[in-house]
Length: 329
Ligand code: ADP
Image (cartoon, rainbow, N blue to C red; front, side):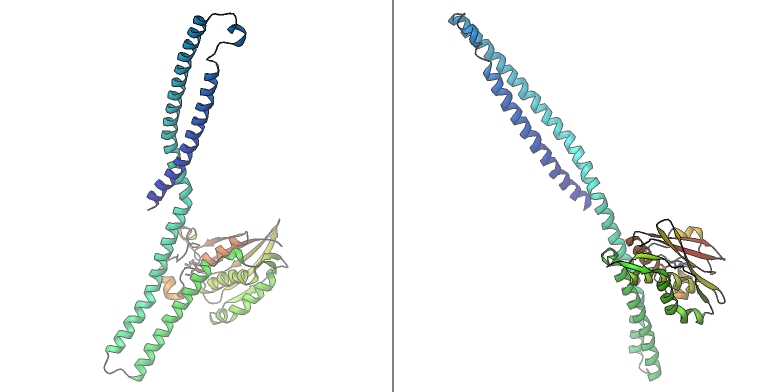
């Protein structure tokens, strides 16, 4: 598909190049032919000094010479245009491929995204379909069974709605969000308030030592970044550990860190965890946390839309530190 578009685009480029080349050649030919026509007559100062046969010979010789020059010029211009056509065809195709490369990449990424999303959507849908079918086929379905079935279905619907929310956030254009000064200690405090219950259920202590720093951005999405990081820190840490949100300033950047004492991430996984749908050790992650591997890619997208970035340092068995760098207000 992209190949045929590249061919069409290169033909379009080639048509423009050839139109210009042929146009210039015609102009050059016309101007040169006019100039050659002018020198057919002998110069005015010697016309009076020579007789008629000499003048006719002169004109005939000049006419023949000018015809030869015109033929030469025509040949050269045709040769030049054939060269332009060949080189232009190669150049146009290379240029078309280059122009289409980012589109091709975006196209492939879109395809991968759709395939991944459909795959993730299929799992809860299949689970729901199977349990409903089994329930309907059961002639002795009791009220208790029905309630269990509904409960299971409700859980799957919850997963689907989390997934669709994640997908929506991922496709939303964070660049368009209205930006204003955002206080980092304030959003850290709100994040802790939101996740306190989840942390206390796992006997995890949340600590906030973020100094007074203000960045330029959208408070809701920046808080979302912190919620994703702290939520992960809680999900992937054992009981009686501490999750710390801290911060510092370096030059024109604010650094905000989320550190846990959890299971850590293998070096081979750290390069992929910001990819959509990536879950390190997927079976374990799926069972324990039911994540879709979208959180970190959403966090990364938001950080980048604010002119910042996000990175991780982790030691398996000891814990991880995620650092978000954002431009100061
Ligand atoms: P998920 O919904 O699976 O948590 P994320 O994109 O947030 O998706 O994270 C991707 C993967 O990175 C997780 O599945 C997990 O394996 C790993 N990960 C993220 N945060 C941590 C952490 N604090 N400690 C250990 N592993 C983590």
